[in-house]
Amino acid sequence: MSDLGDWFKSIPFITRSWFAASIAVPLIGKLGLVDFRHLVLVPEYVFSKFHLWRPVTATLYFPVSPNTGFLYMVNLYFLYHYSTRLETGGFDGRPADYIFMLLFNWICIVITGMLMNMRLLMIPLIMSVLYVWAQFNKDTIVSFWFGTRFKAHYLPWVILAFNFIIGGSFVNELTGNLVGHLYFFLMFKYPMDLGGRSFLSTPQFLYRFFPNRRGGVSGFGAPPSRRPVAQEPAAGGRGGRYNWGEGFRLGDD
Image (cartoon, rainbow, N blue to C red; front, side, top):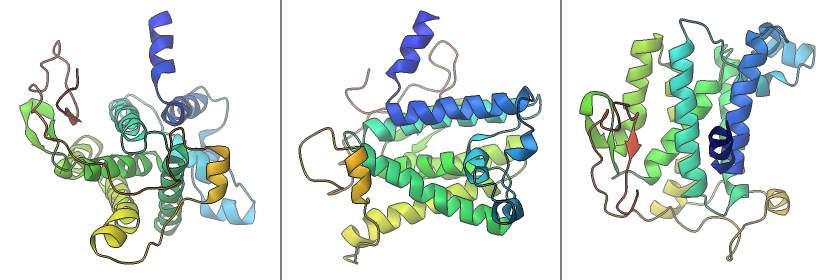
């Protein structure tokens, strides 16, 4: 238990909070402490009965059952793995910028969910974060099931197909990918690569609550530089465990 506690404490704060909530809320629903029907997104209840918690709980809740447990665990792994990498990589020392990205993606996903009558929003938000990580690490070689290797740029779409196979739908994954693309395009691609105006910037009040932990000015300058990467061992090479889209850079242990 001490090892598990040490591992949990080693997760960066924002990812740790999101990860813990994504376990706690489904557990509350599973145990019947709160009727799961109060946790999903129902637009008419949000607007007519002021169930303002639903857009939040719908992002954290997932109906865990024998049929959905594997999909839930896989996406929980994606949350932990890629959110940790973003928070300690491209957003290292800039918690306000990372929280702003999550808030922007969450708002877009909630609006989309209301328009498309989507009750569960956990997977779209996770996929939006994974998509942003993939854009920051386009040339990183990742390994998927059965030893398949490809650049991280393709990872969100491979996972879309993977979740469609095991879950029977791709709407959640596609929504997450499109929202992640929207954020990356407006924050980086359009103003930096195409010379357009900057449409997104982190509000100053977030910097007051979550100040940068390192020197420099608030906000981003450019996406993280990409270093040459070494291909990772084939999936299943670590004691028989599979690595779902885990990329390695030179210098990683």
